[in-house]
Image (cartoon, rainbow, N blue to C red):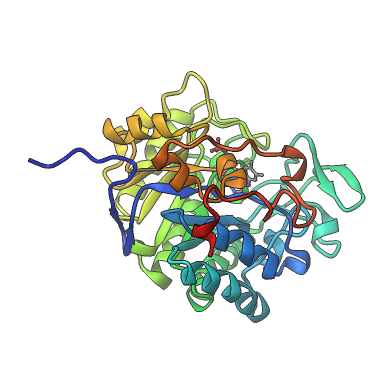
Length: 357
Ligand SMILES: Cc1cc2nc3c(=O)[nH]c(=O)nc-3n(C[C@H](O)[C@H](O)[C@H](O)COP(=O)(O)O)c2cc1C
């Protein structure tokens, strides 16, 4: 009789063998000046190598995919070499690490792009402001991508997947969530196109699926995951037919036999796990406000194969050890989430310093 899976049951995830199911969620920390990963970043991730899998902060697959202050990139040789120190440090501690490919599209500013206008499916600015080096500035009206340019943008995901392998990453995650470029294509309020890339659900989904396929062609589906945030309004996304949109997207991803589908469950009143269960047969990674007990319950109920934790991993580098032993969790200092130095980044103590040796 098969025993019921729990948070600490090993899991084969695509091409990866995970020792348990506590994943570190992707988190932008704005500590990579020059868009280059560095030794401090390597220390931070190595401290968290007890995760079953680390998913890095959002990383630009192309220079035009940058937004926010000091986020890392993965589009040139210097960035590959810079990331290598991170992947080596995580592997030396026995961990696994995937890079999250985040093209921000319209959630950027010319200040991050050497004066260039951010690109998006349509010339529709997101409400709100972005924090730049000289303070918050309104999101600019982006430039609508020309249809002839779109295959080139998709090709940046292929290149990034290839560079990820060169940099020693175990996998990549396509960031299709939270209002960035693939999500802008999906959303009818950000995508007003009436060509092959907008209009019907199928056409709105085409960019995300093509970017995913581009990565799969480079490194294989067993090393590619996709992140979605069905129904989320983050970064001024609105989709009145989100259930239909995501039913289509999730079914199409199901056919790709990805390593994982990562789902941010953030919208009250929309049963995202139920929608996913209806349309997806592979490994589902759920995220959003989890503690150990809820993660155990969702895995036991078969709603998730694994669970990712964001904020708890910032302040508890040894989170899996603590969850397993029932030790108390340290609270995170929100003031040091985005940018700064070692403080609030690599100075959260481990429960048992012996494990850090
Ligand atoms: C500081 C911070 C940075 C984040 N950056 C990213 C990111 O780069 N990519 C992403 O997909 N989600 C990002 N998120 C969202 C987290 O991955 C996660 O969905 C969210 O924190 C909810 O999970 P939690 O309740 O376990 O923290 C970020 C969250 C935080 C707190």
